[in-house]
Amino acid sequence: MIRVGVLGARGRVGIEVCKAVEAADDLELVAAVDKDDPIEELEGAQVVVDFTHPAVVMDNLAWCLSHGIHAVVGTTGFDTERLTRVRGLIEANPGVNVLIAPNFGIAAVLMMRFAQQAARYFDSAEIVELHHPNKADAPSGTARRTAELIAEARRKAGLGPMPDATSAELDGARGADVDGVHVHAVRLAGLIAHQEVILGGDGEILTIRHDTMNRASFTPGVLLGVRRIAETPGLTVGLEHLLDL
Ligand SMILES: NC(=O)C1=CN([C@@H]2O[C@H](COP(=O)(O)OP(=O)(O)OC[C@H]3O[C@@H](n4cnc5c(N)ncnc54)[C@H](OP(=O)(O)O)[C@@H]3O)[C@@H](O)[C@H]2O)C=CC1
Ligand SMILES: O=C(O)C1=N[C@H](C(=O)O)C[C@H](O)C1
Image 1: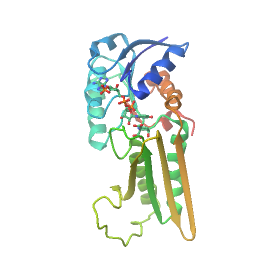
Image 2: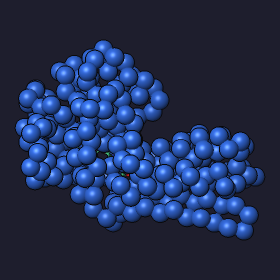
Image 3: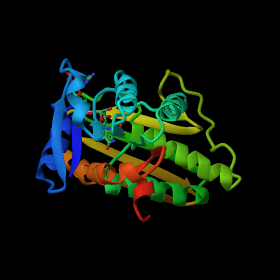
């Protein structure tokens, strides 16, 4: 049995993670911690799953690693500077591992992979991410990561900047620029989490779309991370590294 603690346990995703851990024969839910609960409740855990908020996740990670607990992190907000700090925390606490995945949905991981594969064949690529209006951050972690993967694939293929003669008359009209890829964020009642990657070339458009239909869809990926983190040294960014893709 792996002893699992959940941070953000009463949140939209945390509730589903707790249910999935409780339903698994090889996992034991030893602590379900939310805001204002003492973090020390996690002390008996071997692995902590974090679905909290970008503003608190770094402190949570520092606490887990300094207590010798592996971390599986779904919370967003990890830019290069934060990832460098996480690597520093791991070096300071050898033997403790961290998985950070911007999206634990298998279809979302595939969507990112397909966008990365397609990017080199098109002049243009833009991302539209669409989420529920209570989402804390924009752009989404998934959109940011997809943009980075597209940008990297374009660089490797020797592609230059995308064609764009527009000068925006209002700030934000062209979305956010992530590594040269424009990302547009929609926040709309009724949505959960969705993304379109639109790739354009000579006389052809390819649209790759992913839709999250419920938050239980994240839990198989989270449980995979929980089961594998002890044998996955250091920092791993992205669930694709644990899948046979
Ligand atoms: N990687 C992935 O696959 C996915 C990632 N996410 C990300 O996960 C994060 C959470 O999303 P979601 O579940 O929708 O958000 P919610 O706001 O529904 O849940 C977050 C929970 O964490 C609680 N919380 C806040 N601070 C702390 C703290 N210091 N310790 C413990 N709990 C705390 C919140 O309490 P309170 O409400 O009182 O502040 C809330 O109950 C976001 O960053 C989101 O982008 C979401 C879906 C999938
Ligand atoms: O906040 C959400 O809801 C989600 N957050 C993650 C992100 O920012 O990419 C994953 C998914 O999009 C749902």
